[in-house]
Amino acid sequence: MKNFDLINTPLEGTNLIEASAGTGKTYAISGLFVRLVLEKKFTADQILVVTFTKAATEELRERIRKKL
Image (cartoon, rainbow, N blue to C red; front, side, top):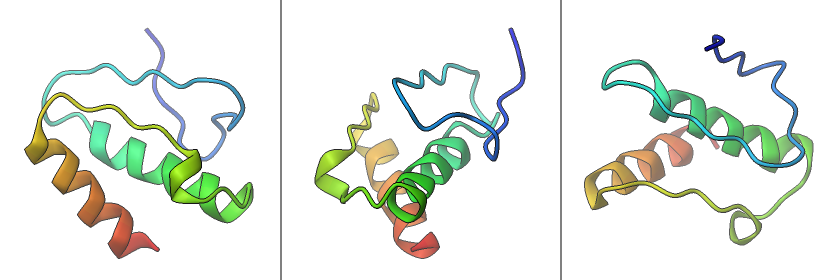
């Protein structure tokens, strides 16, 4: 398994982020989301993010809002 590089990860296609708790998944996903908005001019309704819990969804929303 390779380390995730937020800055150099291509924004085309699909990105799957799987890792243990506390390893930075939310940080990585929110960073990719912001890059898609800023670099590729996507709107939020053009980006699909899937999480397993409502709490994770809310945490992700908050982090993205803070970054934008």
